[in-house]
Image (cartoon, rainbow, N blue to C red):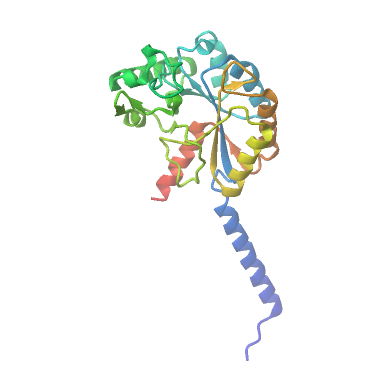
Length: 271
């Protein structure tokens, strides 16, 4: 009977274990050789984004996406500061010119009649989106950026304007509370978690869950240390970013534009 050399068997087993390990690592590192992807998004061009958020991001080497409505005071009054932020690698995303939302829903009493999306035509929302693109390009020089639906609303009047978004942007963020694996991400309704009063423990747990499940996690911030009714404390925000930095080997933190480009290339290659 043929006898297998024990040394050969050990080498074979070692190589087999190594290959299995590498395969498992590859399976769990879809995200630019990281275990998950995290996008930090900030809406409505607030002063606190320029004063509190961007200095912290820059100190940690993180790039984020800021969704801008050009009519907001925090943008038009501080154009040079936003230009500097874009030059440092942050994405200025399109959030329409006037931030229209559907006004005839419960809790939407704050929506002004002039900017009630339920009264818009498709032409009007198209014009406001494209005009905001012109304005943003004048500030950052970029022709490509992502979009975020104001209030998560995708209907203007009685018609969806998602196709208009598809024609002008590589991806768009919605407001559904979900995080998806790379092959399941809907590039024109990307889920996110709205941050409103959560402490850092809750926010960090979302990141840990994304690491465990190899998913995309998008945070949606408004106020950071004030300036908006939807708010997170400076401490909770800072501790979240500190955790991201400490676990950078497992977490890819980038702008939504960069991460959705990666997702699109991956999804296209798997078709």
